[in-house]
Length: 383
Image (cartoon, rainbow, N blue to C red; front, top):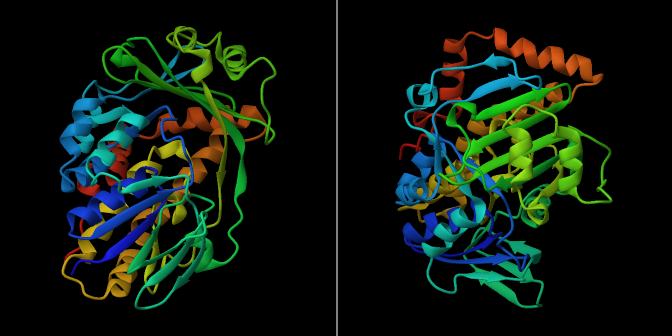
């Protein structure tokens, strides 16, 4: 049964949900508060999310547009290897390589799968009135959208999530993150992470000519570098082993992004009547498992699948919440735990804990990685 659905938020989860619902036969409109949708660095699309994109017929375009990573090494900041798996480790454990793609490229692929004009920028949802038969959403331009249902994909500070749950204050995770894309072709054998006490740098090829990198450091909330974030990240990580100094030197200083990391307590209610939340609006998680955007892509495919042939969208939304909460609950906890270990104080304890993870046998780690991010980890609900 076709319905008119408003998606609030044009991030990865929102756009993917709109595409999935459109392909399920629904009339979908997306509103996004931001006017600039071109910002962002890279994102890792793990095989579980590629499987979800395959359901939307977008898996191959994403694979073709990004770089492949099939291993995942870990070193200490002095260059010592902590874990150096075989080059095809990810393929054997997860079913295929993960894909590293520019966020703007991924966004473009998703927007291109929607009808022209389906996405409106510069509009936020300011109030909701939701019932079992529909929803009325007041937008920031004063208009009211009368729709059959509303999907909140509007992030950690989601208006739709607050409508369903009341106050959901964000909380500072205690550390900040830098991200950038270097014009540099990195040795694929070095793809992975380099760790230090209370510090980490991730670095993965993003196609043949670029490398995506990120770095985290424990820091007070709201800081910024007087002489720019590029200079700051080079001060902190410039003497780390290669390829890190070269990656930073080959990154446009104006394109280095810095964001304090936030999460919040889990939303108790994901769906009520004709409203449902997906992505960070429902289950914000720290970045250490690389599953934030990936779980949003899983949300999209599964939510749309549950609406096919379902005349009662309220029931479909409730089934979605029940089905998905079982999958993401543990991932949220694990990503937070990893973040706490990496940023433990004093920093020496963080270093000891990070090095201790290398004692986990490779076979055990591979099985766990498959349960989190393998193609088989993405499962559509049975009808």
